[in-house]
Length: 79
Image 1: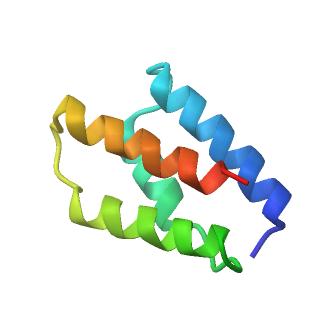
Image 2 (image 1 turned 90 degrees about the vertical axis):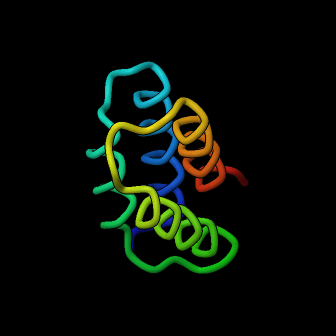
Image 3 (image 1 turned 90 degrees about the horizontal axis):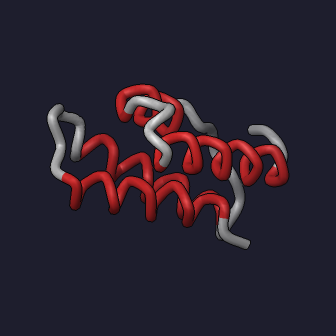
């Protein structure tokens, strides 16, 4: 487990890169699934994102799925 500040900074960076098309979905998925345990509320959001990416792991994905991906990533970084 890294610090919450590191998690938030990383989540913002990953979200921004993914949104801009500079990061592939599979890389984002692996990043989310590789996150450790964090205390609430961030830990809850990490678990929700991990579950989302586990359930939606097939390519190609629709634009609607990508929008939810981005929402999940943004939620991790939210205060």
